[in-house]
Image (cartoon, one colour):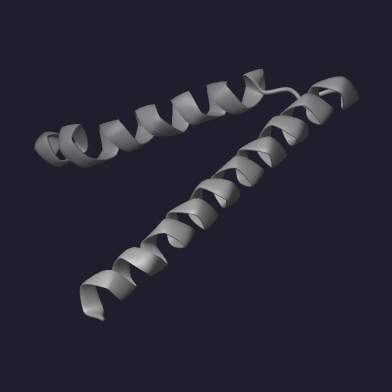
Length: 68
C-alpha cells in the first residue's frame, strides 16, 4: 500500500498544502492596483481585436485571389 500512497496520495497532499500556502499569501488588490490591471487587460483586448481585424482584412482579398 505504500507504493499507492507514494504515487497517488503524496502528490495530492503536497498540491493541497502548496495551494493553501498560496491562498494564504494572496491579498485583495487596492483600488489603484485594480485600475492598473483593468486598464492593462482592456488595452490588451483592444490590441488583440485590432490584430484580428487586420489579419481578417488582409485574408479576405488573398482568399479571393486564390479561389476566384
